[in-house]
Length: 113
Length: 112
Image (cartoon, rainbow over all chains, first blue to last red):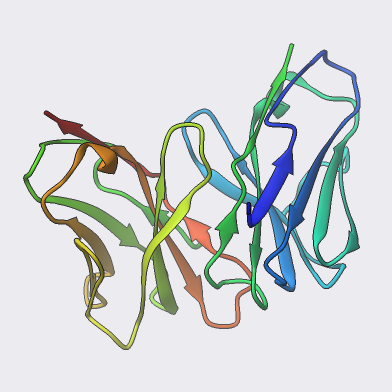
């Protein structure tokens, strides 16, 4: 069973469109995250949620809106997609709070044309 | 500000040799460090971690060394195998902080 699963694996779309990426974890963890990995492989945190409460918002444009319906799910909705949004987006979870070992999903490669 | 960096972006070693991947960190208040391995098309996978009250920690074929004096972290992989080819990241956390800060990454290539 996949511990942290995110869908879709690949997402190709046009500029200006709105898209969502879904993430689910079955580890019973309290905290979930979205990380963005750019073309140079640099991993940067975007958001974290603890038990559905927003903990970290790392100056991400407000076109990005995370939603956590329950502590096992953290979805990422992106409005008005731009070319610079092209990247790999990783969902992750950790047992309690931030700064501890993260368990990552397999990533969603977003390509904005 | 906080930053975690790597000395070498790429590293090639012969299969069977030992490899050492280095990481420099700038936040002397960091007290927890992790190494992750990322294979192509996959998410980062945990390899080993170490707290600042330790200098060395060993796992299966991997050893992490922490030198707090010079703020340096290294990952040693013994008897490298083709499956060790990946990008390796170090990450740090300061006690009380809410996030891991990742370094640039080093691409390790194992030559047959």
